[in-house]
Amino acid sequence: MTVPPPAARIVVLVSGSGSNLQALLDAAADPAYGARVVAVGADRDGIAGLDRARAAGVPTFVDRVSDYPTRDDWDAALTAHVAEHEPDLVVSAGFLKLVGAHFLAAFGDRYINTHNALLPAFPGIHGPRDALAYGVKLAGATLFFVDAGVDTGPIVAQVAVPVLTDDTEETLTERIKEAERAQLVEYVGRLVREGWTITGRKVSIP
Image 1 (cartoon, rainbow, N blue to C red):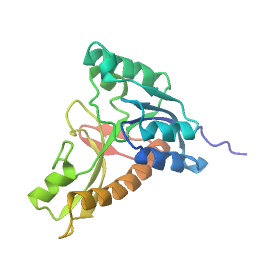
Image 2 (cartoon, one colour; image 1 turned 90 degrees about the horizontal axis):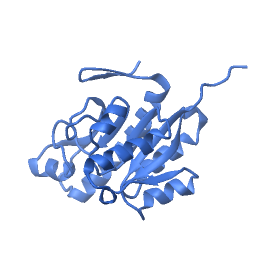
Image 3 (cartoon, helix red, strand yellow; image 1 turned 45 degrees about the horizontal axis):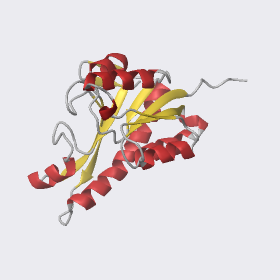
């Protein structure tokens, strides 16, 4: 009998409702997905993302920036708490804090984030709003490895979402979220099952 390889260990970081986290939890329920969420971390208490993790029986931890003397101390503590769970991949799923040098030194080649625009266009926290204001016909979502910049890391995958003539920031954001969530689940699975290499700005999945 062939023994399947052990599931890859994923730590997910959240700041809000955790809808992307839930999509990963649902996908990981299938052993064929090849990954399991071993911990969920947050930068604040009392959020739905932590409730989703607890409902799934996944350990949680919270590191609030305000609980530490400096941002560097926070970054070191977050790094240590993530490292305790020995992740193969760390996923920012709506995590609204920029990590620092400690974190990137430990996890920079296995920390991914998803952004609601087609990078390098419209980085920052208002991707759909900025896309509408510019008048583009295609918006979308980008999955990338995090580096020291803001939404500047090597790109794993992108998905385009057409901008409709009657779109508002809210309607466009919701359609991007759906595409973003599907892309995240697909590529997290591919990364953990097939592996990846990063050469300069190019990410390759065998």
